[in-house]
Length: 334
Ligand code: UT7
Image 1 (cartoon, rainbow, N blue to C red):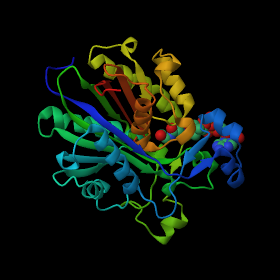
Image 2 (cartoon, helix red, strand yellow):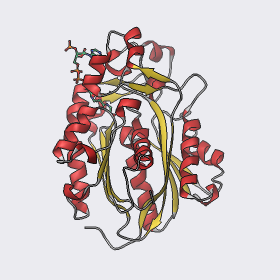
Image 3 (cartoon, rainbow, N blue to C red):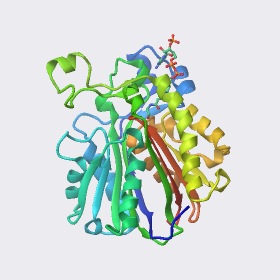
């Protein structure tokens, strides 16, 4: 049940994407694939890719700036910056600290959070707990990933799937009954090996050999992740709804992680939601990992798909394997 306390609500939202578009036709030229296979198996037509010299914090900063402007606050009011990412600028320091400085969020603490494609909803839930506890009142949560930097462009099974980008939300304290009403986070590390970038950590430090062995690229057992995703998306959304005494009938818009239209459709069927209550932009951006949900929220808001008072459900899954869902009573004016 929802307890009587202050909540965290989204007061501003923004996103930033690279300009370079890679179409399915581009991949036909570099690997043995075709538009028909990619579109029918994934729903993806094109995705964005950062070019040489572009890196994660640049997109995170632009998305963060847009979210701060949309919230109508000053950067120095932000008390915490959380960057959900698995492809930050560098292993050290946290990308969140680079973003915090660049934004002029001089009073903010900062840390990165790694939960794969579930990262943004993990970040939102973490931020929401800080706000509910009274520790902070204004938090910037960013989801940013440039998976192109860890993509093996000779592996047709993965290279067609991923895109780059960033999305951000400003969370502020709101009265009980508004904002993030309930969240569910989960992890099943027995599936850790189904989705990995092995190199560059303490197990396989960066060496010439780790590069030769292609340990710095994403490796994925697509079918296993697919089965997991289909199961967990519906379950997590329902569990989060139940936590605040709601059912799927209360949902105005589902914003799922944008990995594959077949996974999104399966989740929609499980939740018995008609297409107009499910947001998807996977066709344009592919799977942007931790950025996919905030980019989708930003587009949904701009497209007028979310109105004040709507019940919005976010649900993600990703490496770990992890999952995360949040139920939000939307408080921003459209
Ligand atoms: O954010 C979380 C990260 N990951 C995901 O969400 C991914 C979840 N998984 C998926 O979305 C799907 O499993 C994929 C899109 C990755 C693959 O779709 P699938 O229907 O599960 O295909 P599959 O892996 O079972 O492969 C079917 C066939 C294979 O050929 P054979 O063995 O049947 O001869 C693949 O080699 O399709 C082949 N294939 C391709 N063919 C043309 C794999 N990739 C391609 C490709 N073009 N790009």
